[in-house]
Image (cartoon, rainbow over all chains, first blue to last red; front, side):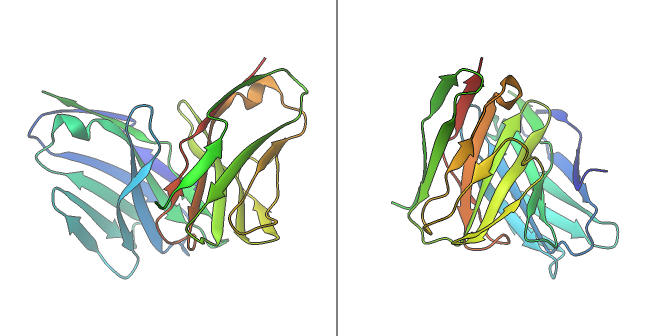
Length: 111
Length: 112
């Protein structure tokens, strides 16, 4: 199966509501979990990351939670704004010095 | 300014004509990667390099070559491009695989 899976593939939310994207990973050795945001026509950029010794990390309106037992981590965006519309990629470090990305989630914030 | 620079930004070529996409970073990063991005498939790693003269295959290495003769440069070589290599390519660099990756601006390649 895939090293990193993301769900759902597309998410539409009303402006001001919260958005949650969940990723699952397969490699027990994974210890680094970043989230990248890619706006239309632009390059991916890191928005937040978490390491395996931490369960939750927050930065203003975004947060990431990690459940190592279940091998999943989630991105939470609160009080969504139109500029949050983008594709979001999760990733997980692999034991062989690689970084595996999920397929991405299209988030659409409806004004 | 810290950056990763790819060239060219856009390239249209014919099947079988060898091409090179250059990537250069000015952050003294050890780890560099090449990804291709296709609709519905996300970012797939082609090759990565842990340091000078150390390269390894990613998820989709077939049809590609790389080299890392200098720390700052990591060119992607397509010896005999085929239409299924039409894609958006990104180079990225970071201190290590477990630190923030900085992406280049992307190269949109079309092979006809």
